[in-house]
Image (cartoon, rainbow, N blue to C red):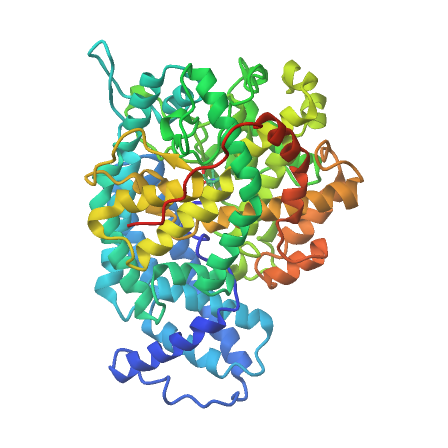
Length: 631
Ligand code: X8Z
Ligand code: ZN
């Protein structure tokens, strides 16, 4: 989720880093940069501490919300209409909010409250933890560094969102393809030369982003270290109340859990594509330009003879988002506020106007209340159908916890992965055959296709099996190593492709020069940094919640079920969403499903596919050589 206000606002108990924070706050005090409150602090709970904390939180929220709202509005303008003026306004608005949330007296008070914490309620502690993590993003103890971060982030976004792809065609003409157009060619073209040209064009954006990313790494790390985090990656992970090692362990486990199936899919896909392109299947890795996604993060459009886009052709462009809303309202959610429809930016910018906008889908909670918006570039096809359900999941989450019961500071997901998982879950539900058939969106061939064919496309597309080595492996490991300083500045592409090769078994079509930066072609690396494991965990959660809904609520087969119109499914979801971040996420998950986080339902969902793939792959050498990670 690219959400300027909420992305970094997820609760964890953060106990490990809290100690560092106290040390850092005390050190800052000793240096005279915080009015000497920390050392003067009594360790026992002072009488009236709870009232003092309440007064502090009230004052903080009153100052913060209007500024955060203005920053959200400015960021929205900058992302939907790239211009120097909008970038400048975004920087000014972010600077203003940072001055409040990172103020030295906020840092000192929170340190004291968390030290004296006895007698404070869980809800108070959770809010203080949010304040602490937000201050750590912009500590007033390092004003120059915070300012440099604001500037570097706004500039990087402007460079990214204002970039125009360019491609020299064989007839000498130059095409400026949109991101949607590149994706369409990679989805449909059988001409390997054409595919390579579009794939390479999609990577050119890395050149202007490379220097900015290095600068961002340095300022983000400086900011995070200011309050005692080991680096910026550790600060982001702290939102889960987990250490970096625990997060990496969790991600490694996810990769390991899906590896046997991924290897079979990889082998099958490589041979299938070789046949499609009329060439021999290479030994080992799949060439990146063979795949239908710019990063190989999912592999749609594989199952031949089933045109999942056909049911959407010719529909009005409003159809996709309206149909997605209908799914939610059928579960008992309210219709979206009218302002969602008037303020959102849902369709590609008209090239004739010259307006440039961010091309990646996102959901925004501008005022932490009813001003919710989505930025998309919807085309009437199956991928945008899935993405629209994903984005509306964020929107309905925002609306569900924007109630008087949930303090503004806790208007966030149970954790960030919950936020990603919810809309994905509805995307999964809206992709099930019984529902598609009910609403006339099932391609006729898909109706007749054997169950395994449908399961195969579910494993390859969206956020599913193929997505996990990418999200839990490549993205997570690259960003962690990048912020930890384990990837040399002049070896960013080497470091990137070493991880792509290791986890995804994908290789570039030709050597990648270090003047480019293929990692920076992925929007999250620039503007949603060190958080991509959210999507991996969200994927695991999605299957866990889906399994529970199908078996326990609907009493249907998880692979062929229909949530549509079921109020009990809606009640179950709302029981999670309405909590926001007021409860510990592990407890929320256990209470909802009876189990902690587990990939068991995900693996079980695809079990029948394993046998089918093993038979298909008989006689083929599976997998690829896993060269050790180099940077
Ligand atoms: O960025 C997104 C959403 C917006 S929160 C469209 N996703 C990741 C991506 O596109 O890389 C959803 C799945 C993974
Ligand atoms: Zn999302």
